[in-house]
Length: 311
Ligand code: ADP
Ligand code: MG
Image 1 (cartoon, rainbow, N blue to C red):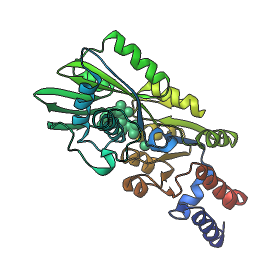
Image 2 (cartoon, rainbow, N blue to C red):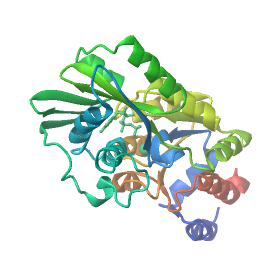
Image 3 (cartoon, rainbow, N blue to C red):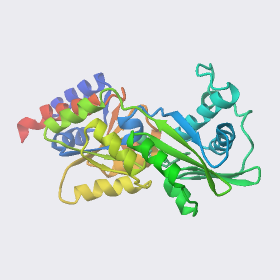
Image 4 (cartoon, rainbow, N blue to C red):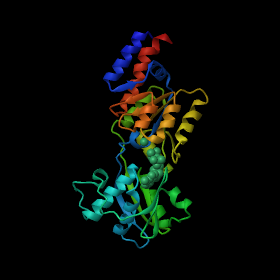
């Protein structure tokens, strides 16, 4: 392609809200053989909300939610916001669904119990001390690594939640499992059609997520992705990209989070969701300003049209 063709293509990209960081990035995209998607905030809207919550082990739902909110108030994770908003509606507004304010937006934590020794455990959840008791909020790994047993009844409920593509958030107080919240994060409306389009273009699609395997499989199935990996620790996504590249496969990564940035940098073509974190945007070769997954296809098409004739 001539420098003029590259300039024109870059301009066409920009007018579609696709920022391309240089001619090399534009060129590499026409060779993409495989696209790895992050789940949360990339394939999904990234605005999770609690759909149901269950208390176990003699605690009332209100008591359990109060402990969960106390622990999550210190976390910036989207799941923490979902837990806080749900607890707020239940505890402050008595479950009336249409409340004007949510604490995660207004930062009003006056109703939340105090906690000390807060710790965020990346890829797992949070822990802290509330009213002299240790509280953990997070996934199965967090709970079982602390040697806490998940009773059969709770395990059954958790599986049911996860098989419906929801993330189960577990709550323990004083070394006993006290609650499970089901958190739903719907797929972006265009997600399935984009996956199908890529597959029709002969491009392999994968999904990687820090979320548990059962939820990961359910979401992947819903969106039409056959290969997925769950329980990927922060940093592990880059390893997945590198292992795909090891036989010469040209790999694109699409992601939005801080923990996607090493994978975005490692990929032959990193594409950041515009609504994502600054760190992801910096690490990527492409920024999809509209945060619409259709632009993954538009970007590859643009590169193919610009570079196809010189092959
Ligand atoms: P991803 O962004 O790929 O979903 P993360 O590494 O952010 O992955 O989180 C992985 C998992 O760790 C989440 O699915 C959740 O189960 C758990 N987790 C992390 N932070 C929290 C939190 N603040 N509250 C509850 N669970 C959490
Ligand atoms: Mg994400």
